[in-house]
Image (tube, rainbow, N blue to C red; front, side):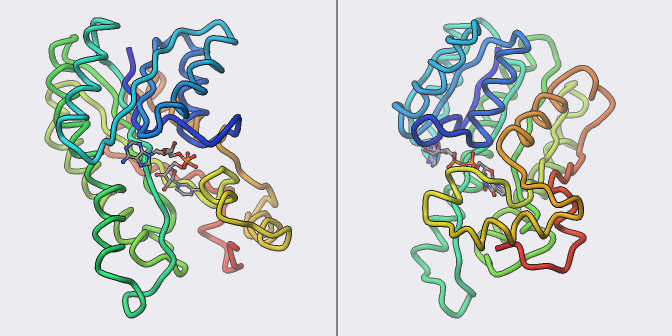
Length: 253
Ligand SMILES: NC(=O)c1ccc[n+]([C@@H]2O[C@H](COP(=O)([O-])OP(=O)(O)OC[C@H]3O[C@@H](n4cnc5c(N)ncnc54)[C@H](O)[C@@H]3O)[C@@H](O)[C@H]2O)c1
């Protein structure tokens, strides 16, 4: 009963999207895992099925309107309804506005923001049809509120916060809750696949007030909570999941 955008992750690794897909399936949710790289979505589905859960994969570039509509239509055709949407897709960027290229700015904005708009555009009418209820979780970042050198990324993730709160206002009357998670520097393929030294990893752990290195499971658990009835009175909320990193002045690596 879930349509999941960006639910893949490299190899057998655990990214935020994959962790949320697995944990929702553990909780009995029927999952659709959508990812640009269908093989990554298939890996997530296999992991879910190995634990006894139900899931189906679908490939698609979710910066494209027709592909998002295809994912939503596929969800309805396979599971009959849509109740939960986790908008997880995101790519990083490193440069200041002076060094950033216009091409990369456009690409980061397109990937980090547009799929949330398009997936929600097609999912919300189906949530209304499925019973005037639903949960949308959009994945932002603490870089939105505590930027540290990821300028284009930070700007895109700030827009995710505004989008989430505006959607919560627009669709509260439809019984749809829209919340936003701001992960800290969690250890996922997105960050370590581009190279991470032991020192960087230590810095990320040390930046946490409780000296914990977060991982994809921490974000997945927050998605499950916000999507569950335990969070029925929570909408338009920004849930920071960062071990206190955004309150620390230390470098995050
Ligand atoms: N890892 C961190 O430290 C961290 C911190 C803050 C926020 N986040 C956010 O968490 C989210 C997920 O991170 P993750 O670690 O799971 O990343 P990930 O790279 O493991 O997973 C993201 C998935 O999105 C898919 N994807 C990318 N572009 C796509 C497109 N156009 N259409 C469809 N699928 C596409 C990728 O193939 C990948 O499988 C991102 O929004 C990221 O910005 C991560």
